[in-house]
Structures are given as structure tokens and as C-alpha cells.
Length: 113
Length: 114
Image 1: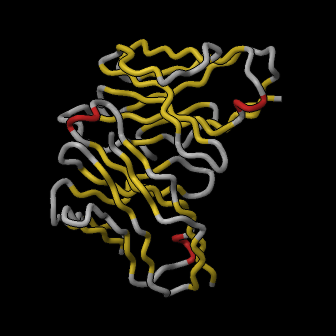
Image 2: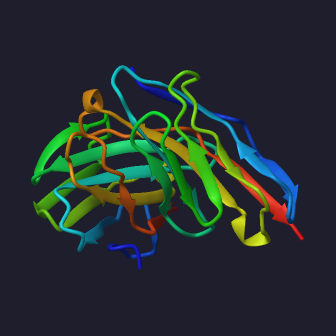
């Protein structure tokens, strides 16, 4: 079955540092890949997505590239801000999963001023 | 504004109470979901409704009873809950189109069972 593995947190960075959160996946089909962000007290929000190999999703300075050869979708940002402190979830959906999205366990990011 | 609205935002209930969580989506989606999010645990999928029919019931105890009267509304009826049911309950919706569309989440109901 499908699975998503995220790098373990928590991750603590100083403002303006470079961020990478690793995500690798296994899937039986050709999945779409997503990153979601959850700010304190809120639900999950879609941050970015990519639907096929070599696609790059980007939003709010965050980027992730769909790498089929390494089955990865790592999240990166060149210069984080305190307001980026949140929990980040990697997820996938493919034709064989029917109605289901498969989520990683989430990575807590804290950015200090 | 997420397009998916959940009420109430917070709920405290005793183990003998009966209450309901409500979710409403204005995005024209045809599938709705209930997730449970507990501290230090992965997201747990509870129920999925597609075109108002339940298509997935993920071994959820019968003290949780979902209802989907139309494609815009989803309820979770609660009765005789346990303290371990305290969690954030998230509603989500999507358009089921080749299984690749993203989920859109509400802000959740924070449930505390005393």
C-alpha cells in the first residue's frame, strides 16, 4: 500500500535560515504529491502540490520538486520567518487509493527570532 | 476563510452527554471526510462520504455516528464518549476526480471529554 515518510521533528531554526524537510513515499500508482501546513489552533492548509514527475510546486517562498527516481518530495525554503512556525505534512493521492489521501506524521517547525 | 466551516470550534462534554459536530462546505465538492488528530499521533481517517454515501468507515467505535444529508453538510454525532476521545476533529472535502485532487480542511472542533 501507499506510505509517506517524513523527517522526524521537531526542527528548530533561526530566522533567515535555510529549511529542508525531507519526504519520501511509496505508491503503487502515479501519485500526486502535496505539502500541507497547520498553524496553531487551525486546520491543515494546502501549501503546494505537484502532479507529475519533475513538477515543482511553489507557494509563499516554499518549493518542492517531485522526484520519481528517488521517490521524494522534499520541502525547502531559502529564508524562514518566525511566522513559518507550524506543523508541516507531506501527503500523496493516486488512482489506486480511491478516496483516501495518505499523510506523513508531520514535522513541527519552530523559527526563533 | 477556508471554504470549509466547522462548528463548534470548542466543545467540552461529559461521558454521558450526546452532542453533534457540524461541517459545511461551499466549494462544490462531492466528497467529505472526518479525521481525528490527537497529540503525538498521526492523522486518523475516520469516515469518508462520496456523493452522500459512506464509502469508508475506518474501524471507528459505534459511539461516533456520521451523517451526510447532502453534499454540502456532514455531521458527527457523539454519545457515551471516553476521555481518550478528546482530540481535534477535522472535516475536509474534495472533488473526487481520478483520485488526485487535494483535500480542503476546516479549522476543526477541539473536543474535550471529561
